Structure formats: C-alpha cells, structure tokens
Length: 230
Image (cartoon, rainbow, N blue to C red):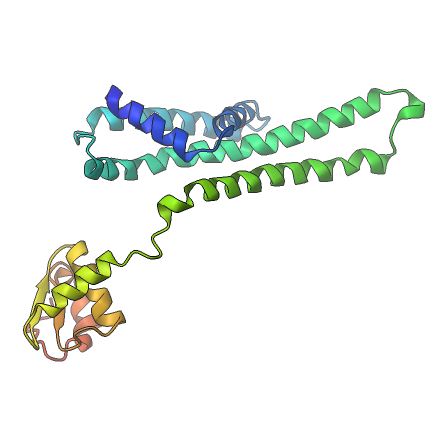
C-alpha cells in the first residue's frame, strides 16, 4: 500500500504544475470557510471521499507496479485528481479576489486627499481577474510544453501496421470472428475507415450478444448469414 501511495504521489507531482498543490489547499480552505452552508458541506464530503478513495483503492489494489499493471491502476487515479484540480482552480480565484479586496481596503484607509476615485478602485478588479487568467493560462501553456513530447504520437503508426498485417494474413472472403476490444478495434479501423481488405467480414463475438446488434448492424455484413435476432 505504501509503495503504491508513493508512486501515486510522484505521479500527482509530475501531473500538476508548481504551485498547484498550494492553490488546491487554498481552494479547500476557501470552500470550508465559505458563508454558504451547502458549499461547506460539499467540500467536506468531497475531501473526505477523496481521501477514503485513495486509501481504500491503494489498500485493495492487488496489481504489482510493473509498467503495464501500473498503467491499469493509473486509470483510477483520475477520479481523485479531478477534485484536486478543481480546488486548485478555486484557490486561484480566491487568491485573486483576496488581493483585490486587500488593495481596495488599503485604498479606503488612506487619507481623504489620497483616496482613489471610485472608478480607480474598481479598476483593480479588472487587473486582478486578468492576473488570475494569466496564471491559469501560463500554467496550462507550460504544462503542455513540458509534457507534449510524451503525449505526441502523431507519427506513430504501429497499431495501424499491425492491423493491416493481420488483415492481409486472412484468405479471401473470410469470416473473421473477433474477441476483445483491442483485437476488434485494431482490425476494424483499417478495414472500415481505410478500405483495407473490404472482402473480409469482421464480426465481434461480444457485440453480437447485444439485442441491438443484429437489427442495427446486419446490413453491414451482406456475406454473413445471421440465423437469429441475437
């Protein structure tokens, strides 16, 4: 459990930009101190559910930390991460609003001859909003720049090549029964979207078991005799 929690923490650190965890804590603080009772209750429930989710999941997850199984576990980190990102966004807005209120308060406590006009004091609200927008957009831009090389698969055609190679291995006019989403999608895309081996009839054993499949998909398989409605 501790090993999985450590890996989760490292992944969360790499996923979030510098300062985001601090803004998330500020956002949680803002929600807990909100004058709205509904917001306070919701923030407590979401925070506790996030903590319980992380602890229970990493206690019960029985896959090891090899890359393949780690990728499977990482799918389930997104649910909790969403709330952390949500609180970070609230924290940025709360910080900008607090700065605007602080500057406005300082302006009203100055001597009368130095007090800014109403338009001048309210004009800071616009820069404060722009500052929050700048923080968010710059963080997003930096995040995209620093991680794009890991997520850029625009030149990757390995799956397509494997799918085409498998399609070319079948005899002419074959009826091919597919099982599993990987086998199904790997062959169906080049076959239906790219027109590779149009003579083949690729049928999913899993999808055939649903009531909607025969009435909706029968016309795509002119060379296949389907004896029943399911």
